[in-house]
Image 1: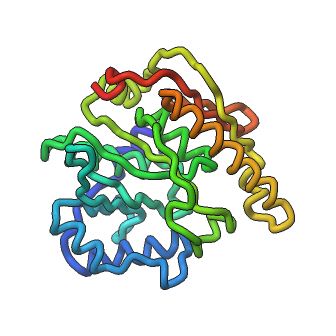
Image 2: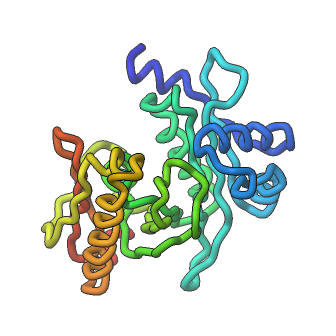
Length: 258
């Protein structure tokens, strides 16, 4: 199946009923492997849908149940209402088929229809693929770092490390986002680079090598926060043929949000 045919086969639906939210709970468990204490219950998905947030499911033509979902909550900061996209997950066996991107685009379409200018979410800066998609493919920018955002996590994906996160700002109407969605890279002067080795995944998964992952996390947190304090923002992300990732920092100005 071609990428065009795959995209056509993906269907995104808004969820409103408890039975639909139950699918989100099952997907949440399958994607992240949380302990019960860390799971978001179906009532939280119900609440999100009823207070102005978003709950969406992704379907493929040959499957009756959702293979992915997204959940966002209404938020307010600095005098601006926005949507915080708290979760986007796709079953492991259906990844790399454009499903997560289809969910993000559906979120953007709905947000624009309702008058929102901004969506935000957090992501682990050690996750190379997520960083590449968020920054390079969707056009998000990063200007803030939060240490141990969620406290300890029961998800094996975290590898026992602190839940450090960066904030993705997705300025929905900006030319930067429009260019990214068309596959056109924005030109800017790269002032600094912060690198993430591809080996980070193996290090996180191995108790014997976890100290290496912690050191990368510590070092990169320091460098990113230093850049943000100097008025820089993450405006690009590169991946090497070997799978290494690199945040590209440039000077922030308000044109990046327009």
